[in-house]
Image (spheres, rainbow, N blue to C red):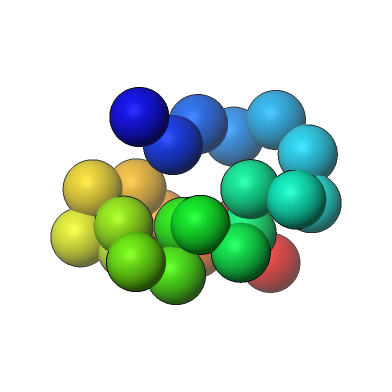
Length: 24
């Protein structure tokens, strides 16, 4: 799903914090 690769993902990672670490 969400993967580390840009700053635009941070928006989606907000709802997937339990899956991946917040990369702000």
